[in-house]
Image 1 (cartoon, rainbow, N blue to C red):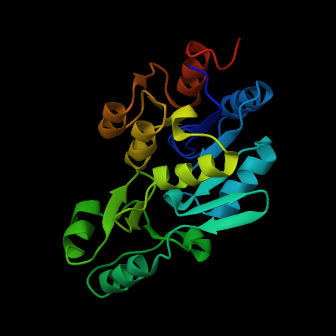
Image 2: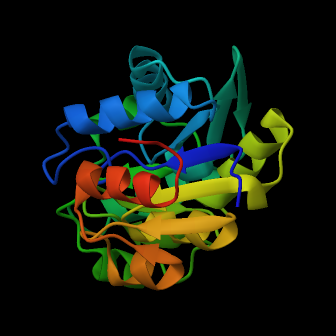
Length: 225
């Protein structure tokens, strides 16, 4: 299949398990761009971080931030979720347990992201009466509206590029990647991926993190050695 774009996660995918960006990941994504495919960063990070990363790498595709809640492309910003229920749920949590938002939530608009040491199961039980989905990625615990997903953001990115989601290759490693791994034309999960991400993918790599990204892209003929 000829893909027209690559949607790729950041944390745990082109970074190592400590969120340190890997040079191999940067070089590989630049090679994808050189092959003529726009790269869409699809991440739980806030837009300022995701936009900066995309700019410094040299990526041309839309940026899908906040787990699909915010999409930017060519100076236009599209906010797909208002985040009000997530903020209301967080205020409730504050009165019941010790929880802390990520520092980057100073710029987060469409959801709430808690520090990764928050117990996602306990949080979900406490929020059982809220219209909220709790999603743990290993890097944060996200409080999301029910239909808030990376795939929603990727769908918007596809619209902005004028292509179909079936023409997008998606690569990720976490539960918040499941929607785009199953919703795009082909989904690739890395060796370090969660069981849910692996189950949603059509290809699981032997390599971890950026090694797995490069392995998949070579195997699928997107790039060459």
